[in-house]
Image (cartoon, rainbow, N blue to C red; front, side, top):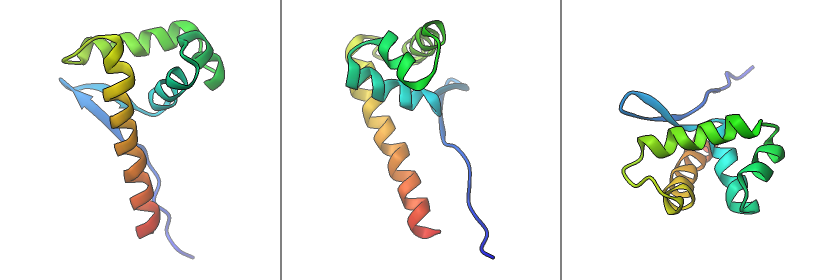
Length: 91
């Protein structure tokens, strides 16, 4: 029996959760659908929770605008996914 590695990555800014978990899925779906409402439905999240998550990320960002959400957010998502792949390969 081999041990398994399990966990989640979260980026924090100013000591507050910034990006990880469902927020990654949310940003990916916003990019795919172009809509916060459609993105929230796609991942089973309420519109209010999705809006609050985006507002929280936006408020912590150095560049709080629409471009950040899909540009810097996508880059951070890619970094987290690469980390997951690296952990899977070294498993």
